[in-house]
Image (cartoon, rainbow, N blue to C red):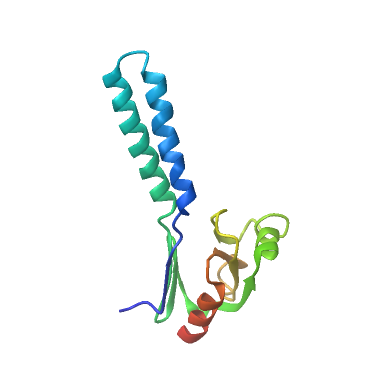
Amino acid sequence: MDPMYDERLSAPAALWLLPVGLGISFMLVLLIFSPIAALLGLVAGGVGGAVLLSSYGSPRIRVTQGHLLAGEAKIPVSALGKAEILDRDEAFAWRTRKADARAFMLLRGYIHTALRVEVTDPDDPTPYLYLSTRTPDRLAAALDAAR
């Protein structure tokens, strides 16, 4: 079944300089031992950093017929209420001072907009979902269409 909405919360291009810097740092530290050790440090640091960054940017948000899949969570859209599109300032407020510890939060600091969706299931103690998304209007529309 094709998803109605599909977004990967991948890291922006500028963050990919971090694994390069990590590899160079490992190389410089290991250079005192030998050039081969330095080369291995460059490769190991760069690859290791890239794997970690890739896994951090791997969560997806999908809306399929009847379900919202956000990272590891799978929630029926029938258990969801009103969706609120959050701009940069409101998204910051909801992930800091307005945040509820019981909320499900799939957030990435490098994505500045979000969607806050109420949970209406009386058996679920989660008050809302906070979902970092680059296109909150499209995600809200997909949730409305899935209902």
